[in-house]
Image 1 (cartoon, helix red, strand yellow):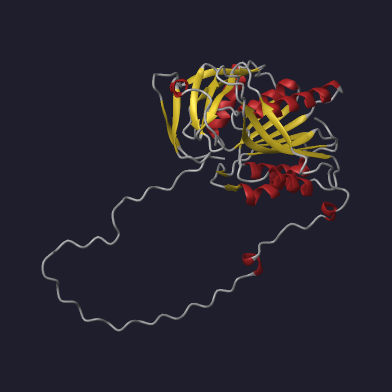
Image 2 (tube, rainbow, N blue to C red; image 1 turned 60 degrees about the vertical axis):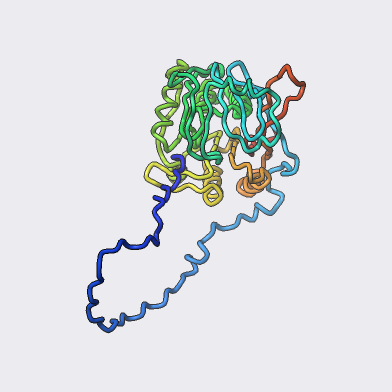
Length: 375
């Protein structure tokens, strides 16, 4: 899905500006009697227009066939950083991070507290993002000194390039490491048992999850509606020296893709979803998270094989509740048994000499379905 664009600004010209004086007004022509047009027939709202048809309710969703796992037993997954990434500090609605050798400052609504480090430390940043405070809002980067267009990072064995985008992102979401580690272990167990698991990565962005899964032994289908993201992902594959791995890079609308795969009878052992709140597909298709996610999850359930590894959903809508997505996934997976875990993803601040405090910054919500309880 492409990133949302802000509507054009008003030109600033007042709509009720007085006309310039053009001299005496001309005499008006004789007014014709108004012509009566036939009244339009009253519009009749059909039942479908007032209340769109809904999918049939699965009785299993309200029976003991639901997956185990309590929505109130939240699991908080944190990323402590690694050699190429650290959350250095946060506060006053900002966060200071290190991506490789580049230090950047970006807005962060969750950082309600005061920074631990001095303003001088923040001023050492190599790049500062300014603009729309919304997570997906456009803006611009300010560079105190010249920087390369791209720079390298790695998460063994995956190597990738970062770059500054107009929507504040750099090509990697560090908190996803918690999912990568779980996925790598689960795929490794399947491979050790003699399987060649198939994984579907929807809204795959720059391909890091796809590369981690493929390196662990999975056959991967990566789907994203952005040609730029697909090209970036393939560049990352080449930089990692993983061109030999079985990855299908598909530029397509995620919803249309899963619907076609359902009709084709395709099956996957694992599915990863990281949908945006809003986006557009390859042909202008509109994606609205709260409107379209239930339908997509139903399609994903159909696509899961009879011997699945699991399904992971991540949502960057922090004003929502992970429990809502837990209950939606529980309803969707009813009848398949299994176990549901859910909670939030966190980044933990790096150690700082000035204080022993290391706060956790919430970044996103997640739900994971597995055929049996796992960690």
